[in-house]
Length: 351
Ligand code: NAD
Ligand code: DAU
Image (tube, rainbow, N blue to C red; front, side, top):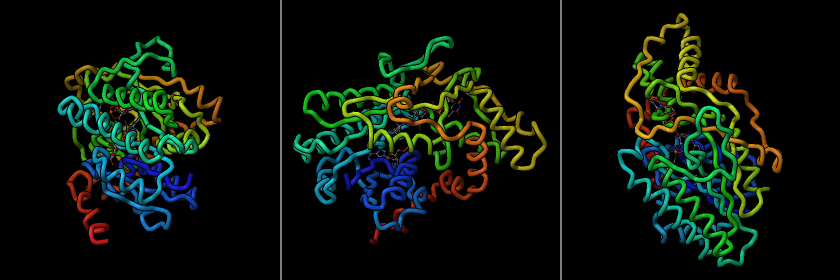
């Protein structure tokens, strides 16, 4: 494969995947297809935007004609599909947007790839990036999700991702589409939109604003550093077995309240504030409706079959992440005041 379409490459995880592929595979053409919704930020890719093997195309995955034209122009032979509406709270207030992009957009992309590859190109790959949330919620003592765990989504976001996973499998089983799926746990790291827990709370601690912990803060998430996820995506894309699903996770479960206290300690220390200064910002607020209690991933398949494991410990990852947000306050300010939206016009519109 030489011409790889990465959808959602201007988002959080997508930008790390684009960066890894552009730098690691100079003989590939990496085409970043992104609509630039509120979550897309081309400033995330400043360091690779002039690389000779990188192209950016502003496009909606729901627009079949435009996506088809890009397949033809670049003779796409691999797809890594990350474009999605990704925030659970937004899915509760606007579920239709999630059905449109996550379900219909994925289906449009599958149809386009199928038409372009015509079922003859067995060397192609359609790799769909999904989430552990499709498996539903675990109680505290239950074993972690495996690839065999029954789907049981609870939020409009996870229902839309589950639906897209089913379409990807249906295209493999019905049309022989060479597909791969991975379901990953919570990612953290640089360039995450500050609506998600970790960047939102670091930003609020920095500004002395309240830290709204949902419910009692007892929900548990399994956290993975985003560059470790990007490396897993690289391995699965190149070495995964067609038609298979791989669970990816950090084996690193944290109760929200414990994670929030760690963020408070780390951020205060890095800002040179006395220990405990920002503890008073913690405020318990009304719980998220349908809030899944616990996610945990059993990643033994990707570890044993593809030799992947996380590189970074959580202590190193959190230190690196908090430090990054504090050293890149202009990135946070541009995102929160909306200035990032003009990046495309300044850098790309007249090219
Ligand atoms: P994100 O919200 O940061 O980025 C999504 C990107 O998709 C943005 O650049 C946005 O502009 C683009 N996009 C949205 N709608 C589009 C459309 N209709 N057409 C083209 N582009 C569109 O998301 P993220 O957190 O980086 O997640 C990326 C993928 O990984 C998603 O599919 C998500 O479900 C999955 N995932 C995320 C996590 C996590 O912890 N963030 C964990 C597991 C899986
Ligand atoms: O598990 C993978 C999923 O992780 C991805 O598929 C999603 O795209 C990604 O957004 C993430 O979903 P979560 O809902 O787990 O992430 P979020 O950062 O929104 O919340 C993490 C936990 O923190 C969750 O239990 C809700 C809680 N929370 C979140 C916010 C934003 C709070 O208590 N307060 C908050 O303000």
